Length: 226
Ligand code: ADE
Image (cartoon, rainbow, N blue to C red; front, side):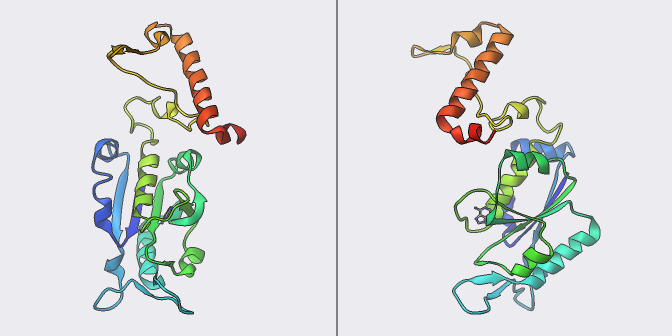
């Protein structure tokens, strides 16, 4: 899978994909992530990318021309399955959307800044708009990083233990059950006996019950959605 990201702050996206699972995904050739500096498509001597909004009002708006030029250059090189604009008024992101996006070949992510982007970009180029939650970030970069990470780890072969992503919270609309590691007892605090029993079927049953209980306690809305 290839993910291109258009941003005015490429530096912000250097670290998130350079470690751990995302790094390994790229080293294995399963994921390619490229950032494109919108300023390279900016207008005039100052490489302008934003301007005052028509009709007045505070805040700069990202201009259509640089974004259009950048998108069209990228589109001339490959076809994109989705052009996604990260925005707080987009569709709320969840595991199901991550699953769907992980099946795509080429994604183009567009990070907004300032007051927003010229609406014509959204109308003419963007195919889907995603919010990572009901709060406002300074820009779309951190949201783009969230998408890349959550999608990247779902690509087959990225995780060492193939079943690991399947047992994540949300994968079956349940939160994940509690997990423990050594020591089996610490300061008198014990790991549940069942996990030490070696009884695979009983352990699976316990985990399911715990996942259900945790979901009922913390996120009953997930059960209602079913
Ligand atoms: N840009 C600013 N806030 C955002 C959010 N909550 N989700 C996605 N993109 C954003």
